[in-house]
Amino acid sequence: MAYSEKVVDHFNNPRNVGSMPKEDPNVGTGLVGAPECGDVMKLQMKINPETQVIEEAKFKTFGCGSAIASSSLATEWVKGKTVEEALAIKNTEIVKELALPPVKIHCSVLAEDAIKSAINDWKKKKGIEVRPEDMPSH
Amino acid sequence: MNRVYMDHNATTPVDPAVLDAMLPFLSSDYGNAASIHSFGQKARAAVESARDSVAALLGARPQEIVFTSGGTESDNHAIFGIVGAASGVAHVITTAIEHEAVLNTCQALEKSGVAVTYLPVDSAGLVDPEAVRRALRPETVLITVMHANNELGTIQPLEEIGKIAAQADVYFHTDAVQSVGKIPVHVEQLGVDLLSLSGHKFYAPKGVGALYIRSGTRLRQLLYGGHHQRGFRPGTENVPGIAGLGKAADIARQSLAETASRTETLRNRLERGLIERVPQARVNAAAAPRTPNTANILFPGLEGEALVIALDLKGLACSTGAACSSGAVEPSHVLTAIGLPPEEARASLRFSLGRHTTEADIEFALEVIPAAVAQLRELSPTYRKAGESR
Image 1 (cartoon, helix red, strand yellow):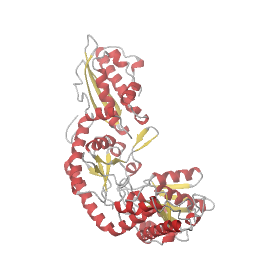
Image 2 (cartoon, chains in turn purple, orange; image 1 turned 120 degrees about the vertical axis):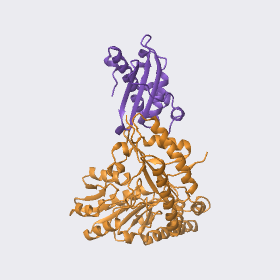
Image 3 (spheres, one colour; image 1 turned 45 degrees about the vertical axis):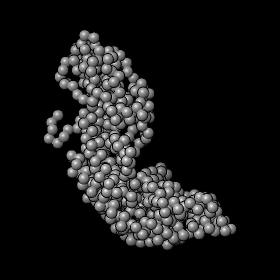
Image 4 (cartoon, chains in turn cyan, purple; image 1 turned 90 degrees about the vertical axis):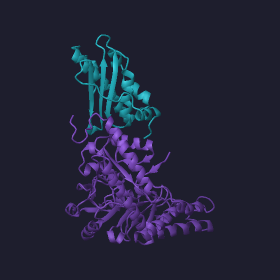
């Protein structure tokens, strides 16, 4: 299977790799996927409670090249966005940006789910209601 | 960039001597081997000489060799051919770790009402010959068991299965695509009635292979057409490919023992080195007799495809056993059959060495693999070093 230049770039130089303390009241953590299915993504965001702007994003991913690239791209995209803007990111945009082939679309779905699940975790910490439409699809 | 190829079970480069043997038939000697004029006779002589060479490599008689387009056609021809010639209800015995060319052919047979038994293998990837005996039914017409497995290199006990097949008077086919050219393959010793081989797995070009059919074996032909190869496999002979296959068979016959022992030394060095340098690395099916060139290594804590890409970016070509199907990448059916859970099957890589693999190639692999594994494990949210807690 051919990999796009952008996938190779993220794979070779993954952006924002790392972890933040889960207990931090301003950090939302999303952990999606399962090792037996071949992908696990952990996406974390540090969110300013006043402005609701995502100030920092970190990821760790177990999975194929496309899964690593999708989560790396997700951290790049959410940084500087408000939670509402980040919740609007669609997996299809990730597919387009990374030129993912059909067999790798699930990687982009997982990245979208990871974004939603990290933000929802933060919302719960802050006592903000989680809208049903923002629940991860998987 | 230094590029090292360790995927010889996928395909091999064409040997320069093989290419030389082919070239005249791609230019000046372009005759059709079925023509009676001198152009044709030159092509005919090349085809028959190649048939002698392939027969000699297998310990068969030249008239028992049919040239095909490769391993897949040979497997289809053998399996559909035997079952197609049988009258009434038919039953076929095979294994869970066959190549798709056999597995999917058997599944196609099932759809047309043929019963198929898929025998399991043990944790070393071996079939129990007694299980073959127990699976026999009065209506069993064919036993098909691969010689060496493509992913693990495990060599099946064909001699014992061959005796069981002979006692039961059931035809016995083997897919020997991964063993021919790597280990001695002798049809009498193995007791097989049909044997598939593929040229590009042993330094001949892609698109040519052969099927050994023991004299007296009754099978229906797969293709209908002209009278080429006694009408048994119609279609104008692929003369350049066949000439190349013949030359590759000659080379294999002359150099097999020496190549096998050198390759095995290198393979063992690779396996030992990886176990020493990569924490928790394990050799899959290490307990079984294996082809001397194949190493299948489990690297817990990562996803195999990511490692293949990481290594390719560093200049090392290898492969996973994973095959893409229906949108999701499924774990290898072979590794699953030896009892690996899906996450371990997905974390296993195959390194298959070749005739031209050098000590320097092994050193290169031992340098880049541990670094790439560490890098991917570092990226993983779930991997924990031994003794480290969450």
